[in-house]
Amino acid sequence: MRDADAVRWWSWPGHRADAILAQTSPPRTGGLPDSPRRTPDSLTLPLVDPRAVRGLKFSAALPERMATATLAQRLADFDEALASAREPVRIEWAG
Image (cartoon, rainbow, N blue to C red; front, top):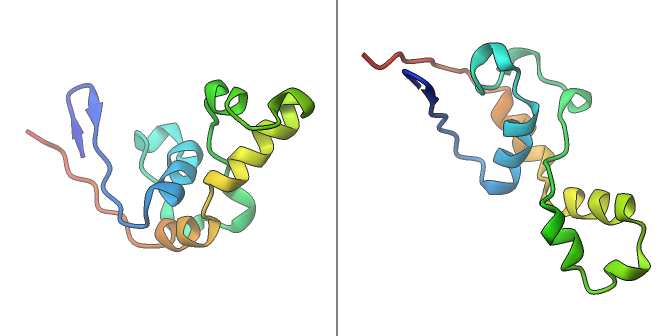
């Protein structure tokens, strides 16, 4: 739902799937998933906060890129994200 400068997006697959959808969503829809055309290859891993990488137990022993990729995988739920992205989308304009 767009309201002036803000976009609100409701979905129900859970935080890990929402993190993927938020990172993957095209700008033209204002952050809403472009549902009918989503495929597993079009989904993007969620962003990882650098503080989470530094908080890993063995972060000093891991290359930063590997640690970031590991956390991104842990934060992701591709099955639910893909299922949610394939659902119909309804856009409402506040007014």
